[in-house]
Structures are given as C-alpha cells and as structure tokens.
Image (tube, rainbow, N blue to C red):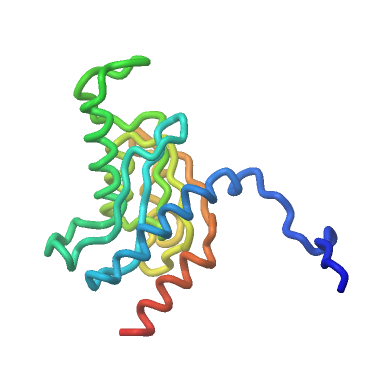
Length: 177
C-alpha cells in the first residue's frame, strides 16, 4: 500500500487575508455549536485583543435569556469590555476604559444592524465573519453600517473565513425546526 501524497496542483492556495483568522473562527464555531442547546440560532463570536488573546466570547442567547439584544456579538463585546475595563492600565489604556481599540471581533455570521452599531460604538478595529447574511447583514450584504463614511469609526471587514462550516451550522439548525 502506498501513501497518498498531497496534490500540490489541487491544494487550496494559502490565503494571507483569511488564514490568520481560522483558529479564532473555529473557537467562534465552538461557541455557536452550544446555542441550539437552549433553542438559540447557532451564532458564535470571540473578541481578540491586539496580541490575539481571547478576551470575550459569546453565543446567541435570546431564547435562553428572553433578551432580544442577546446576540453573540453583543455578548462577546460586553465580555471583552469588562475584561479590559477591569485590567490595570497599560499601553495608553486607562483604568475603566471600555473602548475595544486594537481588538478584533470574529463571528460566524455577518452582523445585523444592531450588532454593526455595537461594533462601531465599541471602537473595534476589525470584524471578521464567516457566512454572509443576505437577509439582514449589515457589514456589506444588505447594508454596510460598519463602513458608512458618515460615522466617526469604520472598522476593517474581512469576510468568508470558514464560511462553509458557518453556513452549514445555520442550515442544519433551521432544517431541523
């Protein structure tokens, strides 16, 4: 029996824009996978500090908590802000500072308008998402709130990181209902 060698002609090419975010997206997918246990739509999010440390996580909890604002992004942003505001000041960050400057939100589904507003207002530097949301996406699909030139803060947007597994999780959830 001969070992199968990788086929370099058909191997996916490295993607320097998206590849750095796959580990964090896998963590967000792990969060998303927990949401259906409470009847929630499987969306997960993580916030990374400037050095790549996870400082906040969240998954949809609207059904679990009865809170219509309990989207994965909002919960991850709140957790990250608590983490940073309780940390001792360093590198120009003041004690109690809620701003997520230098941080990145990684989320399995394109943010809605509410979450896009929270992203802008929290001063995140970047949002990375998996699956596009053609019905309610506000980071380029239906609207583009996060890059609206009229706003004072516009984070970078990176799309389609592990889009297929992100979309599959959602499709499986909705087909089972």
